[in-house]
Length: 215
Image 1 (cartoon, rainbow, N blue to C red):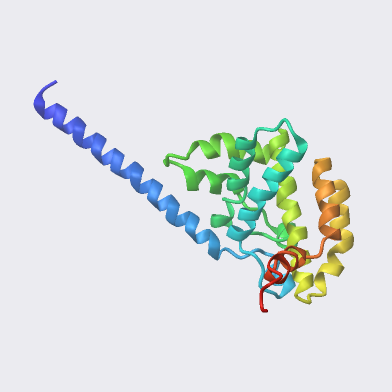
Image 2 (cartoon, rainbow, N blue to C red):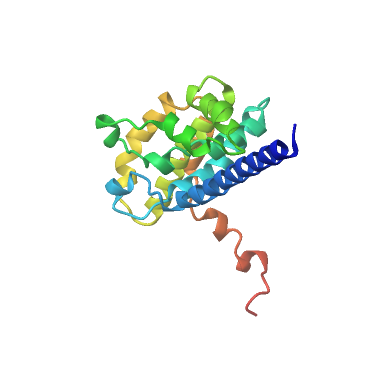
């Protein structure tokens, strides 16, 4: 190969490498906009509630808890699925239970296009597809976590005085009995209903932890 051809090949590799890196950075900017994607049920609640980004963060922790409760689960796979489970909503938005009666988002295409030609493209080909199929225990655990986060937020909204969580109660019982895949998730659902939203901070405040405070 002549020196001229070597230089051409080097330039092509450089351009392709820069384009690949640019796709990675674009993806990071795209992920950042997840904080601005509202959950669809805000329309029905008429209240401020978690964004898709905030919802996804708690789902990660919920899924990890369920994985450990179930045992014998690939935690790394669970974390990957939880991380990516709602990525398509960056491009499709979050469709609520009314919108889904009339329209269907192309979640697969949206997830594919977000991750295509980035260093994380395998998250679509491996992780996202497996999650969407709901065949593996890991995928079922993540879907359970996705559902349970709704019940956590309903309790939080109830604490803030909303009347709507009480109206959702029978429907959420149906989800608990017929939609949750794992027994661990059902146990967590029951515990959510029995737990005071403020319990964690009332028991951890300085007046209890530091009895000499204020004297």
